[in-house]
Image (cartoon, rainbow, N blue to C red; front, side, top):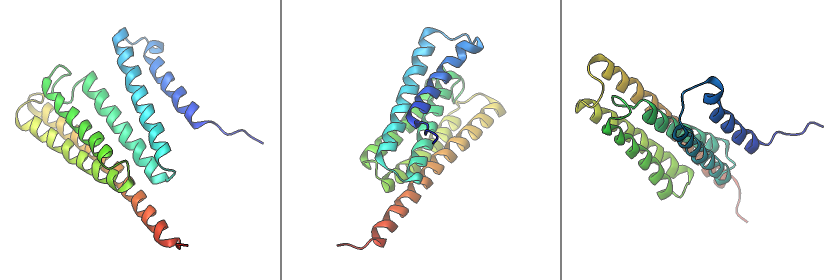
Length: 185
């Protein structure tokens, strides 16, 4: 009988491998780069673990994974190259607000599927507003590059927040259907 693979071990082991890749590929990372990456992976891994504990519903878990990956990538991109202009541009702090909206909304929703759907939808709107504000105030790279960066980045991250919201909404519908389908005793 084959033994099943422990998904927790697989996830944390994968995070360690990703953390080791820059060294294996000879990337010029400093110790602070590794420290930042380790903290980011630990936060993402912890968030995934909490999401797995919160619900056994596949749609809820998928919504959690997409939200965590989106937050991780938004933080990573902003720290590495910056969303608006380069990583040193203080206007990139706008995207920290998007993360606070997502996290604050999740906490206020008490991590219920319906509330998470609403929180991720609001995060998508916050992402869109941050991109629009950054571009209209001239904080993006100049010219066509700035328009392209903001449009592609904002579109991608808005889509990811919306996918997460849709997954949580599906989990909420499934939960409501299962409550109405099972008779009370």
